[in-house]
Image (cartoon, rainbow, N blue to C red; front, side, top):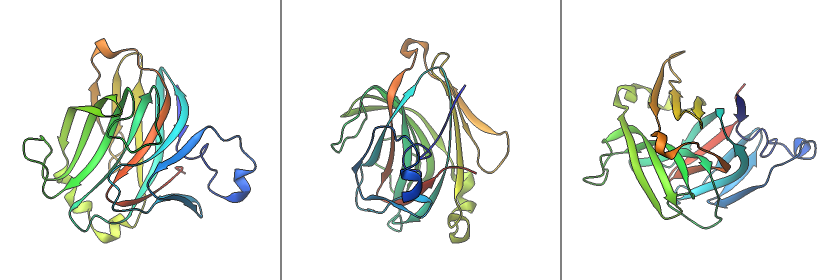
Length: 215
């Protein structure tokens, strides 16, 4: 199984380590991205389509691990972040989708668009991207049972994200960061398999976040 730890390859997160590692092709495409200390920050809370493209070959069983910390910007009741997996291409331009890929998304919205099937408050979504301009909502999960964690003290700490995705079988597991071994699982329809791609994208929506490799 291939294990990919965010930004371990992207930046090394310090100027010294930048010179010591072999960087893959990458692009801070949309938004305001920068390295500060040992973290990568996206600080434009007005940008709805902020993203960083990463050229990472993906096929078969993949394990993605990183940590994310909320840095502000969702005081207006809206914000989110997520990752596109198994993308066949990338673009530097603002885009709703990322080629042919699968987006796993964590969302907070006090007032979602009516008819969008997005729950009010905290939720998670899975989208199938078919082009840079088109995405289809495949799964949506109400996560308001976790609202008690949306406190300033809790949000000050990084949250560990762990995702298993198997491009051959379509099995996906999104692990619960609050309970060891617990996960939300689903299977991608076999008509879309196998999943392969040379690109990933990390993206944010109208909020500030920072990311780092997991300990």
